Each structure stands twice: as C-alpha cells, then as structure tokens.
Length: 236
Image 1 (cartoon, rainbow, N blue to C red):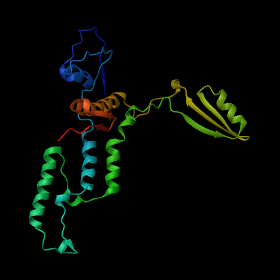
Image 2: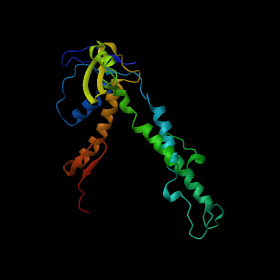
Image 3: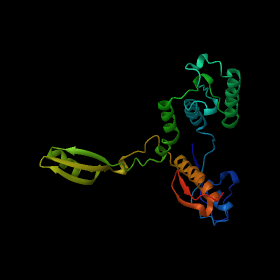
Image 4: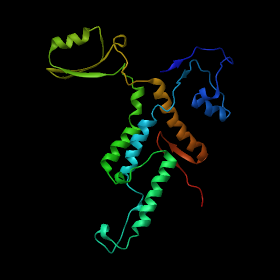
C-alpha cells in the first residue's frame, strides 16, 4: 500500500529525514541545489523484497560452489574421495567458517550439502535477481501489438475500430499486410505487476551504486553505463 501525501508550499513540508527521496538525500549531501518536488509517496512497510532476494541469492551462492581455496586438489591421486594427502578435517573446518562468515555478512544460511557448482541453476537464480525489476515500471498502457492479416475485411475492421490506434501498416505482398497498433488507454487497465513507485526506487538505488563509484573515481572515469565503469589506473 502506498500513501500519497498532499502537496505543500515551499519550506512548509513537514518531512522527516527517513522520508527523503534517496536521490534528494544524495544531492543534499553533495551541496547541490535540491529541485522542487510536487508529490511524495510514502511506503510505510520496509523490506518488501528481503525474502525474495535472500531466496535467490542463497541459490546463486550455493550453485557457485566453494571458493577455489576450499576445493580439494591433489596431483597424486585420481580419486579425491579416498585421497590421503588432503587434510579433510581442516578443510571441513574452513568450509564451516566460510558458511558462518556468509551468514554474518548476508544473514543467509548456506546449506553445506547444496554447495556445489551448478551453472544452469546459478544462471536462473541470477536472472531472477537482476532482470525482473524492470517489470515494475513496464508501460503496459502503450504496448504495441503486431498482427499479420490476409483478409481485407478484417484489415478494414482494424482501421475503423474505435478501440485501437493503428501505428504502422506495411504491405508484405499482394495478399498480406502487417499492422501494428495500440489499444486506447481509456480501455486498458494497468497490469497487476506494475508499481511505478517500486520501479522508481529500484532504478534510483541502482544508479546510486554507480554514483558511489563515480564519486570515488572522480576524473579517472572514461566511460560509464548502468552496470559498468571504464576508468584509468593510478600509477603504482
């Protein structure tokens, strides 16, 4: 549930520090003039996606396997399970410490019997972590749809249908035409997965992570995008 507050005149906004937009908070700290804001949305509930993130992060981490220094290796034995050159007790202790450290850092309990390299499942978990957030800001009201028509009568129906806005027509051959259209917005309801406030915050936090590194690198930055930065190396 999102609570939309009424608009206030300048300098009259009774807003507390935890209600600041995260971008406004950043520009304020950088002594940048804060632009006027016409509307504020307050989300009274925190940690909406903790369970979702923790579930897929756990799967991704387990499917990454143990770090390389915690994997047994021996050049003398073909079967590591029966190898007598590996200190198995010490290795298990280090693996236990790794699981405890991850719990302390991420508050996620890894299961030792599930920690094994699984590239396929790891890929799926990663996609669930990084690729689905854009659906919250998906513009379903202006979605372009494409149809290929062979019947002149149906083609005319699309042209004169009051519920559709025809955007593009291409004659493919003597008997086929391609039509692209959108439904009139007054007849379209927003998809149930769309939440502009959550989508905006997701994008904001992502851009602030990039800004954090840009601020640290300063004039060493040559190029940056939403998920990458190219910068010059300092002299060692």
